[in-house]
Image (tube, rainbow, N blue to C red):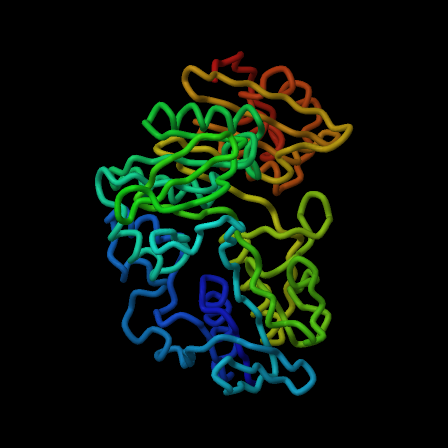
Length: 425
């Protein structure tokens, strides 16, 4: 049996190892399009901070790890998939035969159509090559302009701040982390960042970049009319699935590859996992892109088990986001924005940067957002993923959402607990 996996990020590596465990004799080929060992993009900020070296980003640290497992590493970019002929065509003209195929090609960073984005000191922060360029420019005291304050942008911001840069962030949304945080929570994160010395502009766009008066300097013009000088511009304006090579392949694609609960596409024997997939959401039942690493790893394991002839399925992808923004921990789970007709509760202590929001459908918690409440993170995830019926505890939580731990102990673990009284958040 020949297994080919396109993409050697976390999803690809987990799938390859799961396949090997399930089938010791199968032929497994893992394809990556960068001249690097398989590595984690999520480790790049730690590299920028100086906490790890490049080897610290590698997904597997042991020398000869993949050779020992009989997993063949191939360097190349997928150019096309011939589903009928069961071939993956590479950009260099070579092709790989397969019996089972997993597409785990991930995402690529988006660059908005801004004049001047092709300047030498404008970079995304997505690859090790990007990181090497940023390290040279992001020195202590350097003026850095970051476009985008989403999840990835806030992780990058943490690293840039740690390098001692003068950081300005421009976000087109009305708040920071708009696809993860409620309006109130996003506003609180902005206040926190400004307290740490970061200049934040929300509801604004960079309209153009042009050379400044000094060599290597860029002048950014914002939609607000303001102008900002920068030595380095980081673009963190979002990502999109790597699916262009699937044109005319017969594999069903919309925003991402459409998969079923087994992570199989419409073509038997061809699977997908990670950022490239458009899977059913755990809460809403609608198809969605959930480009986060925990989902990628879960999907990869499910796909690999099925590719090896086993039987496994995923009940749906769940939005799980935990973010450290300059020392402030925030989290959101599930359908954190709520549902039409559903009930919700929100409580904020802006002075101490603590916040919680709960979203309900009937008596089930379908989404939650928190800031500064790290002991609540596991509970919020457990109640959301467990689809736990809260019964009378829903009304208690609507009165006091800080009692979420009590609700979890009472309902998720099946025993009532004594009322502990209202506590400040």
